[in-house]
Image (cartoon, rainbow, N blue to C red; front, side):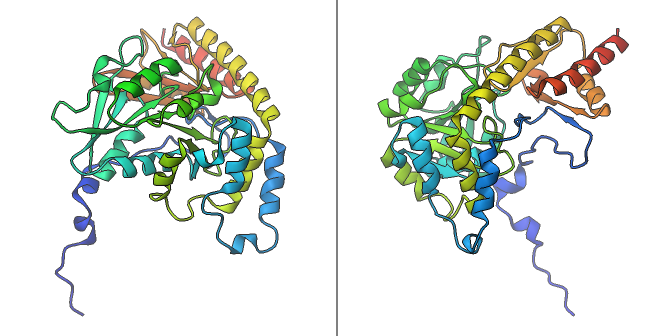
Length: 366
């Protein structure tokens, strides 16, 4: 048998792929016994109607057939709930899928996309995969966007073809008001994506801005506020002409039948959503106040997590000590900015476990 002398397959991948580390999701332990407050999942069970919808979707031969390529069942229900036209909605396999579609649709070779920093680290990965520049503009100390964010080009002269603003932002949990984002969209020379993955926990949102500007696209996730992280479903809202173009880029059947049925049932149960919002907001306030009692600096959050820093203690050591106690939070470090801890707002019982462990850890290091 002759051994081939051709290059190994790993050496033949695109240069952009070989050069990047790739996005690293938060830890997902598969064994029991963890208090998991690191990836902003909803700690409550989803609406009971979701289980019924999944069961119905599995009956007969429905799983043997391809799903509706545009998930029109969900589009109709979501349009009714949100008060918009179904043609303004594009569904995706989680909001990450929609972000991928947006980058592929608007940003080509030699162009750039712009994002604030620190924010969702996947944005840069998506730019790297597409082989385009990710122009990161630092938030101000007050978590606002500086004038440089609306510049039509990067410092290297590359035209900016897409801007993304997470609102509320991660990891800070801070929120820009809709009027500021509308002003940004009017100044930018490209579309503005408002990533509202955590929008259901905030005081305001930008859905109404889509009617006012075809430059604004809002993305939403069913993973957080509807407790459906396990099914992967999200949606984008934009004017119909924009949705039509985005539909050309998406995979043929990017939302499966079970996920579509579950998401449709979930968004129909707005009573469940309101109760869940109330629970998480109350626990968010309690968690923030208790962390401040421990000496942490905590930013007022509009999301289902809080961002905190400690003036005297190592954030990484706190994270590692909690992990030894089977408690996961997110340690995050950013170049040229610093590090800190992001803590998901879980149930009150989960927060009790966290606070008890923190008390012991901080006492040990006095």
